[in-house]
Length: 554
Image (cartoon, rainbow, N blue to C red; front, top):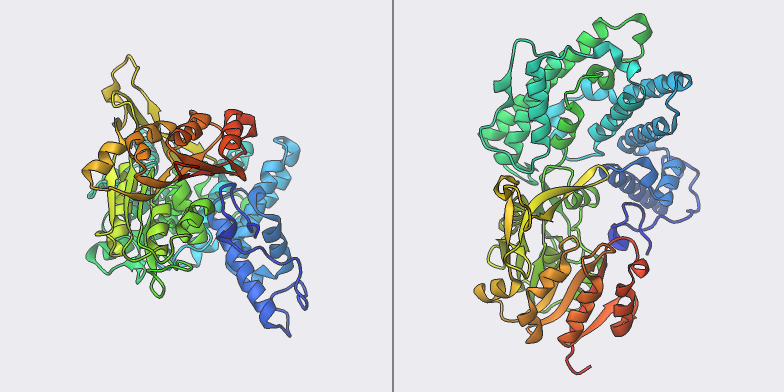
């Protein structure tokens, strides 16, 4: 199967490819008479369009089949939520393509009017509390914010009406909000409205209230009701803050309309309301619309056949969290899944280094046997905490051990946390600061090395059926730290992520070969794998998986 759409790391089975044509489809999904085949196609097309929009990607990233589906169905009537999102994504695409000159101003203004028409309902017509409590639809705030950002970058004069005075109190608020938006955790009790000053505008108040609501959502009231969330006083307070925040946002909107010149008659939406303010309102609303618990229906699961699986995610635009929210499935590569599927019905022991939110090890434990057990290791504490919550929510605490360690061979090395930007998404990474001359202790979140051998011994993992290592290019050093387990045949199958910028891709293959493992990578085996990995130009783009099977006599 070919993937229906998505970033380069999307897997083939994430979505079924749309058929090229369906007999009886007359360019609209609401045409009558219909047929079960047409109805199924339309429903699947709508689901895929919404998933693309939730990916928070640029319109250019959409797969041709999904793009064709958007044109082949009447999205306004049969998939109205996707219709609004596709319109906003296309407007953003068109704005990007416009030359940055005075001749394009008229076109840019017309595009902005169209975006306002689509988005104004989220200020005036909906109950924001109810909307955010009903689940993720198509990340509307992200797509509105994208339009707003492009207009500010290329045609700022269009939004000159609503530029607030640069006062110190607002600068303090903006700095605090932007810092908060970069965090995957929040301190319980933190309140932005305590920063309130008399000079704050209605928009400032709205943003501070939304931020306070989000803090409660993350710390005390996560998840949707009946989908991992529960009734509580904290949830009531969160909803009150959302309601009050929307009141201030509506007030800001009315203020903008009241003082707008006649030429602004058609500028009647949230983008004009935000104007040239530095307050990150769209980012705040998009964060509120990014669920931190998603109820998944795992296909072909052994342990969750008739009940949902609750995956705990991070609130930021994180690569793995974004994938789960988009396709409503665990984030794991097909090669690893195939290794797990070969053990279906058998209890196995799985260890994952660089587990992050646990997509692969969770797949192994839910698709092999209810007595399978696992050990997940990651250095990023917010991800470790989220994975522990996932284990607890799904009654897996006895089967899944989650540890916070930085795994590598040289225990004198130190690493500092950094964030790698991947388009609009981010991924936590680590920088080697072992030889830094300045004060290393002032750097954020310093980690020292722990060997995988020592972890396996201390936690009593004698035999490992599958070991997965995916640590953003440092796979060789993590694998080095497990040489004792590899040499003894303690690990039966190794699955290692391979990227062009791996520290030593050929050494990974050679190390495994030296301990009696047979290699498989991208249709190559053994020495052919070593040759391919010795020439970085031969390594395909993206992330692939090298599989090594313990077979000392091969």
